[in-house]
Length: 350
Image (cartoon, rainbow, N blue to C red; front, top):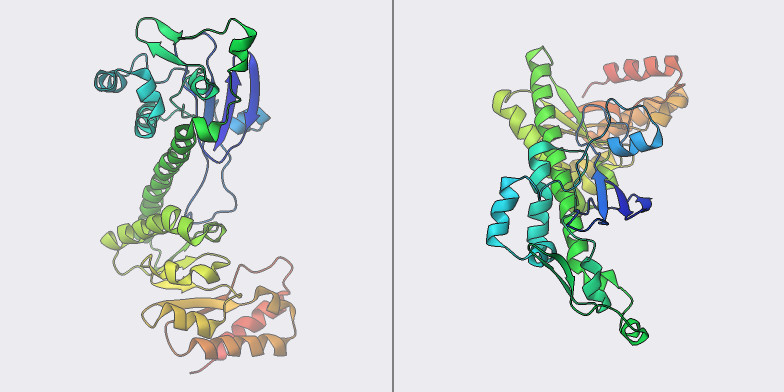
């Protein structure tokens, strides 16, 4: 999630962990916080997380189109916002209530999908935390109840501490980031489900799903941002192609094995950092395993390669095992060693 924040004529650029745009209100100088989102889940081949279109354009990178968003994205034209205002006529209530902030911020995004989501807020929001009482009155605009005239008045102004004075802003940003991210992940999920079905319809007899970034997540984040979508892909494919074997691979997944099995795939592919016998025990007898010879082994002697292959097959046990490397083959691997890998593998008998 990338954000551009400007305050009057002063502009700064940041890439926080939460999405936002600050909505323009009635004043001429209003804060604007522009956000765009990039990410991916369970793509057939994932090598990097997509950067936001807006950031790419700002940096001068090649983009397929100019990013687009509108200032005052909701307040001046959307009937959904105007209807909400009838129920909540106070601007400050709308801009200081987390649930309302999130709802209003997402209204235009849900309809138009601009390249940024505007955090519903106002330039005067910090004032209350600085001991400057104010309100925004319909038909009049911002009203400061006790304007500052003297040095004594200035002495009464407190330093602004956002975490204490406007915690609802941070909470809303966190929720918005998740809302937008979940919407994007859902689009990837729907698209990947269709893609797997298409491949199956075209003759694919088994499909492997790569979730290359899954293990960058904590277990809690995996359960929120990856597991539900992987499960949706599996469930969606099984609805139309119940007999299509689905394999799931996530590099460095030793800490997530049990969670990977919860996706419902037929096969979990283990990387070489997991002992095959231990992986078998952790996954249980009802799921097949794939792997998991260290790709570096193929740079060794033929005797060493043979030893590691036999060790893996022995630990995997009979049946429900696909022999493979624990990751993609490494550039520069001797071709004759690859030939030896297949020769030994095909000569194994239980």
